[in-house]
Amino acid sequence: MNTTSKRPPVLITMGDPAGIGPEIVVKALNARPALGPCVVVGDGATMQRAQAAVAQANPDAARWHWAEVDSVAAAAQLPSDRVALVQACAPVNVAWGRVQAAAGQAAADCIRWAAKAALAGQASAVVTAPIHKEALALAGVEHPGHTEYLQALAAAHRGLSVTQMPVRMMLSAPGLHTVLVSIHVALRDAIDLLTPERLSETIVLTHRYFADRGAAPRIAVAGLNPHAGEGGLFGREEIETIAPVVQALKAQGLYVSGPHAPDTVFMRARQGEFDVVVAMYHDQGLIPVKLLGLEHGVNTTLGLPFVRTSPDHGTAFDLAGTGRASAESLLAAWAAAL
Figure (cartoon, rainbow, N blue to C red):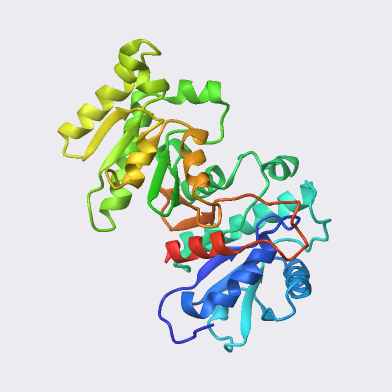
């Protein structure tokens, strides 16, 4: 760890201990001198097991010496050949590649520890390795994924309800950013969630995220229906909900347009016509991003009071324990957080 840096460390959670998260964290640490100080938030035995799996697959892989710390501040005192690790959950010994309640609980505990540290100003960002939503549910966690759980933790920290701290998921790949109006809900429910208020909130959060980083973005809003409804022939959501919101926000000075035909708007954005696309539901936005390559995809949560990114892939249970999973998306998430 670079102890001379004044930047607070990035916190990296291990993800589901039965998946590839711990292994890609180990692999990502090979690039850590270029990415700056970090603290791994996880389970020591799980990280040791992951390091052994990576070493077995690649005997030339770097072997880090782990140093357990009880705070982010203590990590800054470590020598350069040590990786700081916070034991943020009860010790776990779970089988690789299976959905398990113990794994879900460990993942949730690590997320909570990292979020609380970030909310206290102790970290420059949180980068989260993949979790399994079914494992979270088995552990009794009421939130279906990272985004909703982090929103709840941040809202509680501020003494707010979750509706008072709106967040959105942004998925990015080279040449394409897309922000989702709804996330982990059934498609039938996603259509009901497309309200003027929620759409307007999504566009405003998107504008603020990019504007805070130096430029007002050109926001394209996708339609919900084929051909953006074709003038009402294939649905009226574009006429009754999407177009009025777009016009109202355009009148307020935002560079927003739409609704655009969803089967071409992502291509147009990648060709440089737009900076970001607002997608109406989960798969509408994720399919084009993932088509560009999981190894480059990054998930960013807009609206949180701290920076949070994640690789845009899951736990890959079929690869867990082999040491062969790629860390490229995690590295992209780490770089994007910085």
